[in-house]
Image (cartoon, rainbow, N blue to C red; front, side):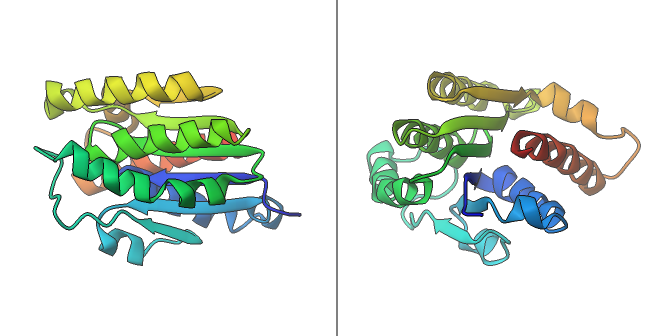
Length: 195
């Protein structure tokens, strides 16, 4: 069977969950055969260890962090990858976008992928997380703007709020174990979108 579903893991959260999805689906040949997996991120190191078949490195050497990023330069970076996204989603029946919103990469790339996929005629679904309350109003505002745009392109959006993320983890475990529990539960949600 040819590829029919493209899954984009965008940013740190998206690429981490995508790797877990790939690991889980490796046990199911019928599911794996119809998937195309794409990891999209800025730190090259995060892509070097990715299990995705395609790694899309957002090369932005002049832009550090998520703070006062030059929006014009960042838009140039995004525009440089639009054709690559179009090529990947061409002919796909469904495109799934996994991203944490609030930071630079997830909040800008996820809407771009959703928009292009819809333009190409694919069914678009997204699993998105929003910031935890302690991350501050700036990240929350950025996440709200991105969510609004994604909602305008996607057929189905599953949003997990920061409070819901916190509730996914046991309160008596170490921080790294808590994030592992959260990632595992998000992975299960993505697998549901595929089936």
